[in-house]
Image (cartoon, rainbow, N blue to C red; front, side, top):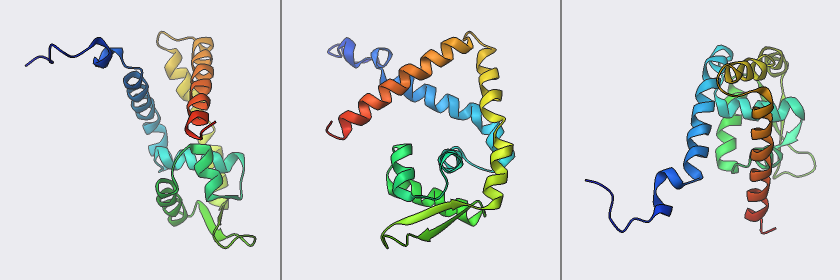
Amino acid sequence: MQGSDVATEELKLRNQICFPLYAASRLVIREYKPYLDKLGITYPQYLALMVLWETDGVTVSFITDKLILNTNTVTPVLKRLEQMGLVERTPSPDDERSVIVMLTRKGRELERKAAEIPLALAGRLTEGPFSHEELSALKSSLDRFVAYLKCRGSGG
């Protein structure tokens, strides 16, 4: 059965901005998987670790803000990273409601192993129809898009 005759052009999947963004996200994560499997981590764990590799010793709320995720999404990721011996979580001395997350030595060592991933992935993507310049322009546009939507979501 085909879609309803009353369906408007605006409701067709091919006309949605959300679908190619969703599909691209899933497909890019799939490209990361072989690299992350070698490290024994998932994509959400990789994201949390990247925040910590950039700025270690931060609160859970700092990580959630950077990743634009809710605490109830990030906390299980951090708990698993702690079980794996990659991070330590300790109560903040300044605010008992806050938790500070710090990399362990094992977490810092993983950074060296993960350092190859961005270049390897960029190399794979530029084997196709995209140049480094086009990927850079796409990232820049997506950064602006995310910033705009994030600002709108906060009422700004």
